[in-house]
Image (cartoon, rainbow, N blue to C red):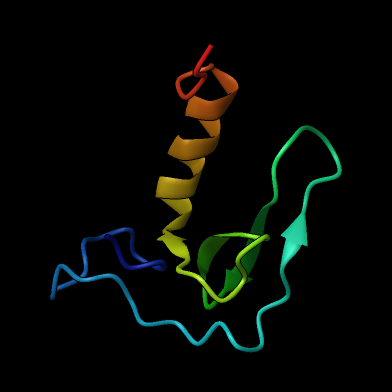
Length: 79
């Protein structure tokens, strides 16, 4: 995990503990699934909208960019 401002790895090597209680979650109106994302403190959080009390994945902007590019290229297609 990297610092959201510098892009450098966090000194602790751990993911930040973000307060997601006030996050504004967004969902796509395209495709299948119930994935939701929120922008919090310079990070991107992603969760399963069917289980909003479950865990969230936390991405730095660089990690999110790599994830989105991979998804667009079909890297995660199961078919």
